[in-house]
Image 1 (cartoon, rainbow, N blue to C red):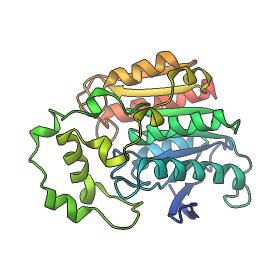
Image 2: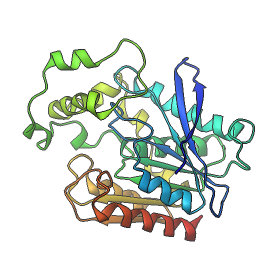
Image 3: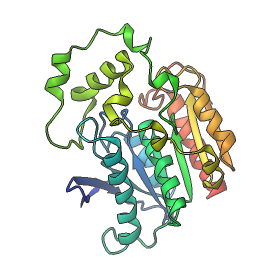
Length: 286
């Protein structure tokens, strides 16, 4: 895998976002995978996907564009969604002039919170009659914020040492943050899940329905492949399973595991098996 080309984009909120483009050199399909990382919208970096998986997409002919987005609590969810949507529109309008890509065919791919962004953005695109993705890849994602598990203290995270208020105060910045390594910001997420206050970290006091679209809208979604672990401690498996029943031409891959991001550890076979299944599914459905 060659080093990516870095592009910079300024949002309407004057937040600078970087994008990393990995170009395929084999059997090019002229389709770009647009990737949003996970991290509960509180932490994460755009280049977190292991090289093994990026290479799988590149070797199958897909270009791969990984995207920054503003993180909470420095930026609230309205800004995060607006900024992420702006990036997609920027790609669609400038695929050739800026990125040097032959066409604007694309696939949305997100892990966890990144999958949430993909689903929200797709809904926005459909409602505004803008070119929707050819497909969506949603790994251990969700579509709504009013899930009970997101708004109550987590038994799993309360087994970990308590995070102090002083620790959190040292992490939160007074300017927008778009690069949040797990090593420096994961404590934010632990604290939020221990208290059951995660949604308060990412939202203002708006009605959560504003960020949890009607499931009827899923009927208009493109082909979607989902994957999740049965005993995921962060995002209940039932969410992915339910989405797969509501979205036409969708498929849910089940991983029998207690891990949330089952693809993080590349020494485990489950990750590459799932990515091989995703690529095979894309060949049939895109």
